[in-house]
Image 1 (tube, rainbow, N blue to C red):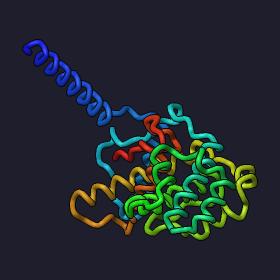
Image 2 (spheres, rainbow, N blue to C red):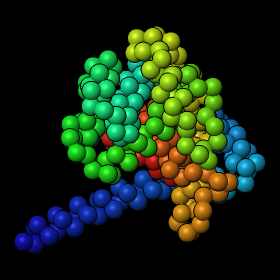
Image 3 (cartoon, rainbow, N blue to C red):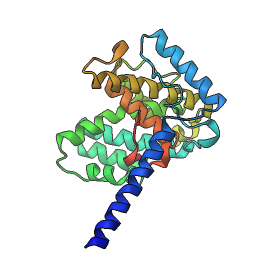
Length: 246
């Protein structure tokens, strides 16, 4: 018993040391030039809109350009098709239309394990529907990343769902994939850095029991942060496990 207790204590101490080291490292980053410049540009935008910025200048950075590999165009296109189906199912689209959509866009093979649970649910829960419906916002970011939307509007309101769905459906799966052109890394990282700071401001306000600043819609900001973290392969996380650390 004594040996087991000692082993457990040593294990717990090891874990504490590990997390302590990680926390210290996160709060004491030596940013590259590109990271510092990107942060400065983002904070200038935030300050122009009256959005608070994080005070610690040695923390809250996305990874450097050199450390990031973006998702491929085909990965992003596949994600768009998956999100399109799931979001339309959340709207109560008739089963016959859903089946046709699934076949046309080969949806099932593009779904994650969590998404398959919703896909196969004859009577999904209200929470499942709500979660799937919010993914229109992730799809909106994907459309921007593929060049189908010129710029992401200030996230104070939800996206125009009809316009976004129309972009995909009018082209059809083959033409949509062919015409898609993934934006360059710098553009995507700039947007990821900015939305990280918007999300930090939203979370900070929520913790204080305040409204999100500058009329930011915290739900929209969260979904955009989620989508962008997936695009930049933040912490090498798959879609079901993306985190939006602030």
